Amino acid sequence: DIQMTQSPSSLSASVGDRVTITCRASQTISTYVNWYQVTPGKAPKLLIFSASILQTGVPARFSGSGSGTDFTLSISSLQPEDFATYYCQQSYSTPTFTFGQGTKVEIK
Amino acid sequence: QVQLVESGGGVVQPGRSLRLSCAASGFTFSSHPMHWVRQAPGKGLDWVAVISEDGTNRYYADSVKGRFSISRDNSNNTVFLQMNGLRSDDTAVYFCARDRGYGGNPFDHWGQGTLVTVSS
Image (spheres, each protein chain N blue to C red):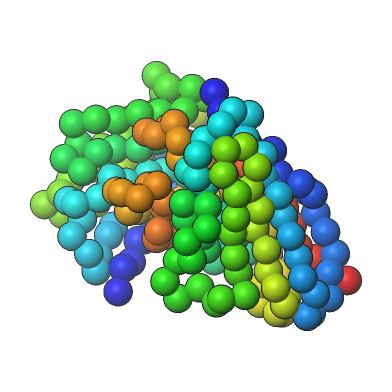
C-alpha cells in the first residue's frame, strides 16, 4: 500500500503569511496527487489535482508542485478563510486511494 | 450546480447494520464513479469504497472489506453504503464524493456528510 506522510501535522500562521505543506509518498507516484481543504461542518473542497493544476474557482494564492515522491501545497498570502485542515491524496493506485494524515493551519 | 446530500446516519449498537444514502443532482450521475470517505472524530480522512459508473466494479478499504457494500441506482441518482457488523471504530462522519473520472481521478465534489455513531 502507498503511504502518504504530511508535514507538519499543524502550524500557526498569521494573515498574509506564506504557508507551505509537504507530502511524501512511500513510492514514486508521478504526479498523481490531489490536495483538499476541510473545514468543520462544511463539505471538503478540492484545491489542486494532478499535483499542480488549480481546480476551477480556487483562488490563485493556492499552488501545488512536485513529482515522484515529494509534493508541496503553498498558500502565498494566508487569508482568514484559509484556516482549515489540508490533506494530500494519492490516486496512483486507483481504484484505491490514500490520504495523508492532514495539516491543521491555525491562527497565530 | 452539483449537489450531494447524504442521509441515514445515526446511533447504532455494535454488531448492527445501517444503510447510508447519497442523493446526487446537477450532473450526469451515471458518468461518474462515486466514493465514500469517512472521518472519525479528531482524525483524518479515510477512503472507504468506490463504485464504477455502471455499478459493475466495486472496491473497498481493507478495514471494511466483507462488512460494507457499496451500490448505486442510476435511475434515481443515488449511491448507497450498506454497513453490517458495525464496530466502535466505524464511528465517523461519512462523506460521499464524486470522482471526476479522469485526469488523476480527483474527488471534485463532496457532500457535507452524515454522522454514524456506533455505541452500546
